[in-house]
Image (cartoon, rainbow, N blue to C red; front, side, top):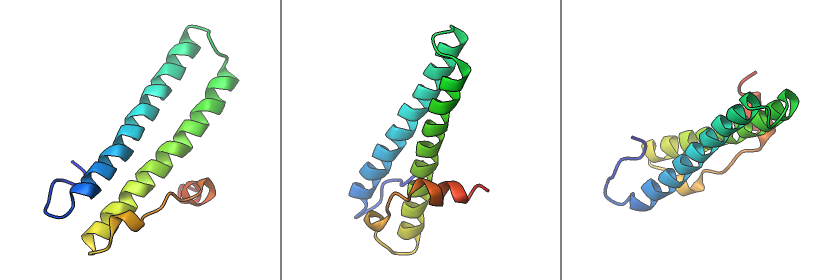
Length: 94
């Protein structure tokens, strides 16, 4: 579990939970898109376009969680973590 309960970090846990909730919503959107493609409600190019946007958002969420965890583990303030731009986050993957 990310950001388990600890003294003085209850606000951090809630924030991590908010980010994880967003991750779950994005994963549900991915499933919905695949289902729509399977039922011919959208075409492949539309599915790919929307999936790419979702993947970028997921990468940003995971990056934000990693930043928060690293700050917490080194005595920093997890609230100082920030959402990095797409180009920066996606650049890590190439």
